Length: 286
Image (cartoon, rainbow, N blue to C red; front, side, top):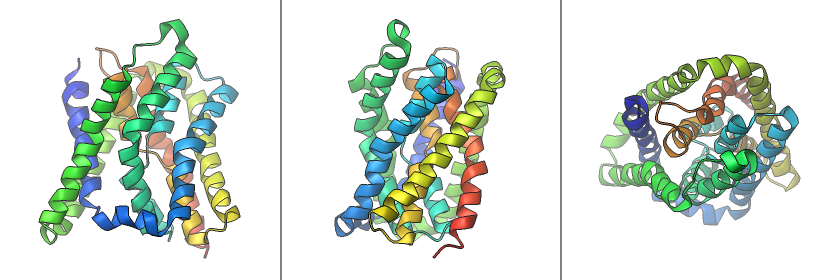
């Protein structure tokens, strides 16, 4: 397997999840019990609503089998550090955003394997690659939970040192994210060019729909505007690096980045075309 996929990608993802962990405290988890309704709305949006909307998008836009699986992989991923930053820029509830990111990231060890297994069976049928749910869960645990817990533990051990290093680590994580996204696109350049006309609009429509639905569902259920903005961002913004890693490592090929990774890679680019204008509007809503 290409060294970029077998070494750089898993280590890069682990480091990105580690940077998420060093930004967390135990309070981010205990806060869930203090604000159960807001958290429940955000969590259900990500775990249930997001995969359903992604599935419908695949059908509406007529996405081909392998790319459809890639869409569902992306939909199975939790939000990442990016969603926390965007929630802050949108003047949302950052504490709620961090809590959702932390818990859903840990929960992805359970949700991702099942959504992945369903997707390959549904869209690829007899041509579906073998997906071992237990192995997928173990891989997810190693790539996400372990780095998060290490970061969380290191912050607890060195509470004064880690916050000083956090900006530098965050910049390094951003560089790794850009490298991974560009490498995934470059590795599937022909497929990217041939399908961009379909993939791009489908991803834009998916993100726009989820962002709007996330906001209005929260408002209809009585949440504040601040909470609704956060739930909106958390519902729409996914960890595309994790999506690329799942596609390449778990269901990929031995030739490098697989086609399954392409939706997550393209999403990592087009996401900002939608979410930044949304954040701009949210900053002016109280």
